[in-house]
Amino acid sequence: MIEDHSVNASRIDEAILMLAHYLDAEELAPLLSVLRELAKNPDDGALLDRLSEVFESLGMLQGAVLTYAPIIAGFLSDDSFSDRD
Image 1 (cartoon, rainbow, N blue to C red):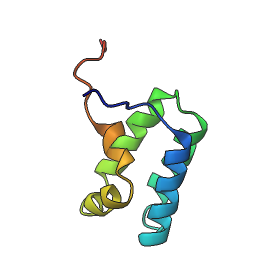
Image 2 (cartoon, rainbow, N blue to C red):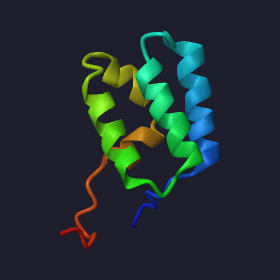
Image 3 (cartoon, rainbow, N blue to C red):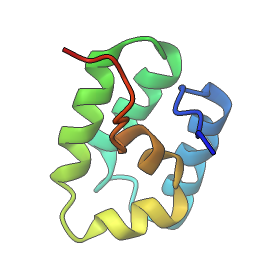
Image 4 (cartoon, helix red, strand yellow):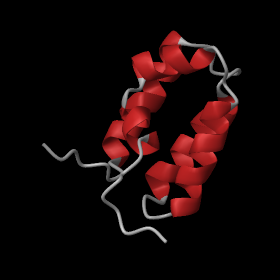
């Protein structure tokens, strides 16, 4: 089964709400900022790169973030079938 890794603004908005509700929004400010931009500009590949950088910098918070916003895992997963150079 092939998963759809496309950006869905409503799912991103839901992820932002969950993260802000259950985790420290101040601590996640850079991540929430990137997610808001991604919801506005879903075709901007540079934002996915930025999301990856910000997520990596979260350290131990990564697990909690993925618990409340599993859509992020889809954005960060490798697509071994893509035509990237």
